[in-house]
Image (cartoon, rainbow, N blue to C red; front, side, top):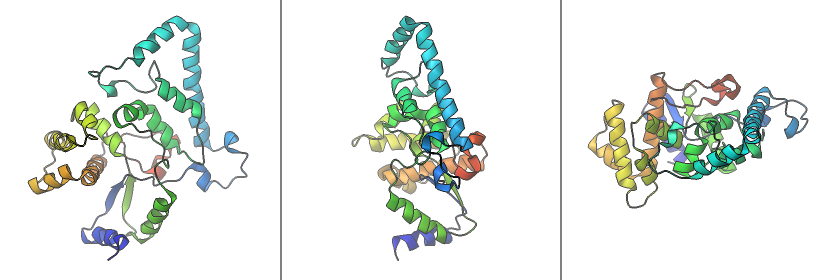
Length: 268
């Protein structure tokens, strides 16, 4: 049996009717646009215009603060650049004063309608600094997804059961929300990428989820999740699925096209 057939067989065998994927399920605005294109910079698509308006507003407000009191701004900037290992990274939103240098650079790069989804900007607004500091990643829908993988998924999707509901999420965002809710510890997230203590970090995270989210994990399954990072990531995505079933996920604004993207941003 091929790998593609095995996936379909697994879905049918266990009667899976909802599945959470760490993969973009929707396309950028340009992919489905039927208008005579005036060029990316003049894109008339409402969601693109709204994203760009908000990005411009954030940069304009930051420039106004700099112009009004440049000395205080520079003092606050120097203080913000100092790294405190004891601070909780989730307490400050990327859009709060003072915006980080990295977030400002991301805004200045702009929004590309044939590459970015409106969802990207929503994630930047809420998680940009956390993703960069804790996971050393940014969020670009197709930044780490090759055309080959996209084509394969498009093929697989045509062979899934018609009533299978697919949702999208990201492991890093789920872990950030678990940290924000004091279910897991910040040190465990930092330790996940460590070759020596990553196993211990995964165990601590799983124990925190068991304790706070009314989840029971058999010892045999726990061993698999601790030793296999891919199995661990799949479990974290399943936690987001449970959050969706319990109707606790965050409500996305209309300009993100929430029905189309089917993105789960959990709230614990």
